[in-house]
Length: 324
Image (cartoon, rainbow, N blue to C red):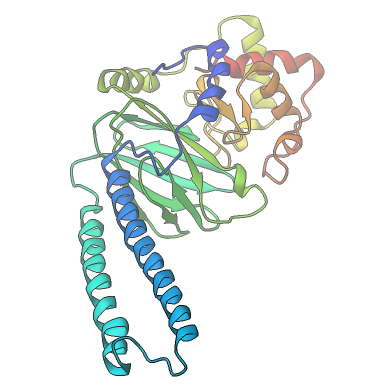
């Protein structure tokens, strides 16, 4: 699993969205494995019941043709008792007990890395309260360690669902719901909003990126460093344009006067794999197009078109792409 450190290679990480694991049939963590086991058991049991019903239906049709006065094979009372009471109890009660045991095991552990996840229309705000890191639309986690997600919504009800890692949990405005997962293999795993939340619901993706504990520690250290000062004239011009055009009213770039909370934190936008929660690869060209007219790429999102001066456009995009 690579952590791309520059904007040129970051553009290539859109492949991670396309190749990210997102199937509940192939679990890569203990939570998803327990859910998968429960699903397969239920599928096997109910498939057997379905086949039994087909067999009984076939037998009933044959008996009806062969007898002028067909009777239930076990008699009226015994057939109803066994078929309507005893057999359902013998099947459903063990399944209920198994489900309750599995549900109890899905409770989050006490000792885990805490991440705060807030859903917005239509992107994800990701905060690491213990290290003071804020990013958007990506969650970095260490392999083999439990992660506790404290989740809420900033507008409507959303739902966090990484099929290969765990089940679904709703994000509710004004409330905090708790979700946990653990990734046992390094790689990229796609998560999706699973609760219809408006026009761009289907394009509200999130990438869970699992790396080794050593890589995660290095990533954390790198993200905690203060942003490098824009030294060359082009980046300085781009930074001034960012401030003068009012971008800082909605976005935050730590270490600058830009402290807006309406849109995603842009402190490390240059290292991000995609823009618009997986809509397009993060490259110079796509970022320029997004800044110019985000509605063309993701209609309905809350960022209006930007009217940047022609002479400031290249410096602005260059400055943003340098924020790694």
